[in-house]
Image 1 (cartoon, helix red, strand yellow):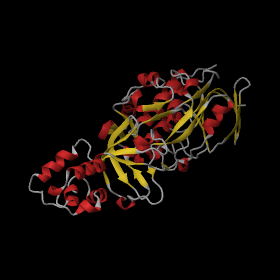
Image 2 (tube, rainbow, N blue to C red; image 1 turned 180 degrees about the vertical axis):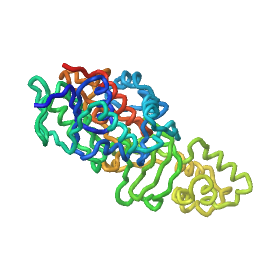
Image 3 (cartoon, rainbow, N blue to C red; image 1 turned 90 degrees about the vertical axis):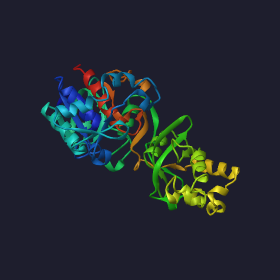
Length: 393
């Protein structure tokens, strides 16, 4: 029966980087995946451009039931580490808004590079291979669709439930539960918010603008996009990771500006005779201004607005509350929140505290990054941490 030092379940971002790291340290490594190609989800990230990281990565960019869990791995894999890795291997990068780092050659190039380097380091790939059963009398005995093999270590890099169209599954959670680890209930994250039937702002579908969005003690400043079913765009995806059902989010359509000051400027100048809806269309897109302006005020000259009417408009433009019905779901979510409880995993090595030789990395863990390259950075950081810690037993 074939035996390895390391078996990795999942040929995505974290699994590939872990495999490469471990193999370069002289370990024999096998990677399993039920897909026919490696890095299937990685190849379409960032719209195919691969937002592989961010210049400002820190523990504050992650949601985790154990707030200190990310510290160790991030400290040993700094923000520009993967950028340097790409450049060492002939791929470039481009920095865009909010410190986002994209691969100049695209996502397919990143995935192809990782697979090529892993194969050159001696990694064996078992693709289109479904793991049927895992036992551990002494070593891990892995029964898969093509046979059975033994491994001294098992690394679960199977991802979460987001993007089922790219092969996402609950496999990793099942492995955790089989070996007695707790799983924080998974849920979609970085997802659009739907409002449900009768969405009064559905006619604004396609309108986009910068906003401040708040929920609880969390706030994000970025773009919002109105859709036929609700709200999307980077600001909404960010807040969705914190949003709780049946509770409102608060939207400010004039981030960094004072509604009262903007209105006073128009009321006291050459624009004082403008109809209110037209005056407000100079602050936000015209379709949104028309939607937010009460019909009884729309045609009135902006100079004639009373104090209480200005206060009403200010609330609608800078503190509008909307109660979403639900998250759009895993098909539209960027990642999965929840996952294997990190309180049962070593923050330094990613190894189970109760089951020696069993590791969990990447999205399968209860670690969720903000939008902007943070989740892929965690894939690299956690994969690197495990790859450095793995040993022959």
